[in-house]
Length: 474
Image (cartoon, rainbow, N blue to C red; front, side):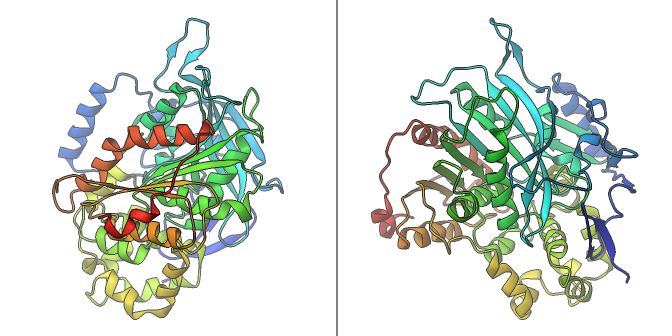
């Protein structure tokens, strides 16, 4: 079976069984009628939602890219050439927030948003255009010192360009032809803005930008994209943050892995980022273990995103993927590549990966028998480097999607390296096996404490590691 190619800014990379190049293809997917009805009901409740096809654009490509019925603004089409400096802005435009109010002083609440495209470096050492958003808060910073910056890494949104976090800030609910995307991390964004901290959100490599697929849970791509977002924020017109501003990293789930990776990479990749602290919630630090938790779960479709992303980053995996997937699996990989979380849950929830493999074995068994795959996942392991700034790591003890034990092990690994780690085991009852409830509940119950902890770091307040308590912590 001949490989497809995803066009990069200056080169092409072979990838297996992926959709046609995004500049040329207009993919749509359709959900079952019951799901479509559910989406319509949700739409009726979301009065603040702006249709995705109505977003403003800047001229950057010959024709619009459409992903599952959602038109991607031309802003997200990267140019052929990128700046040389990591974090350098490529382009900006005003970003209307989907949820905002007029302020008494004429400024919008909670702030003024700018859509960004900036340059980063991917895991292969090549240049990559990344999009995102910067929000200058209307509220004053009262924590002491100059206004700080929170670089926020969103949790899993999907792999389709319509799922980009910056688009969800404009359209908190996006519904297309077979796609549903909800900006669930917007709550954390708004809470930081209310505290007077500026916020920059990264879309990650390939999520939103139309030249490549999103490299889901690739620790280097994600860590670099988050740190470069912090750099890019300084150059936004009207931004009050500078290179001297304290920076906090924040993320949960996929975002927790991104913030954890960025915390490790900061000293070598972005020493100019004045890192004050990191919150890493439910980080997928050991993908070998996490893939076992995702298989047969409500989020089983995320296996497709992982395989698609790693095959794009390392084209030599094409033959391995082709040899180990059957026709059903190949079709699923192509289908998931344009899906958001809602689509994946409804389309592939609780799927057993054995249905996708040529051997009838689960993906975990195939990885265990394939040294190349083991090596790639080992390279993605977070915990081999010491973060230089304080980290608060939280994990739900009942989390059966992004497993509790592997997240706890990350805290242990960092503590052994002398990291300043605050470990928080979130104690909740079992809310249902493999339903995502055990994974999502700590996001909500711990969010207030996580934001307060990180805000204290941004204010310059000291913290004390609790690594000494790890032997008795669950």
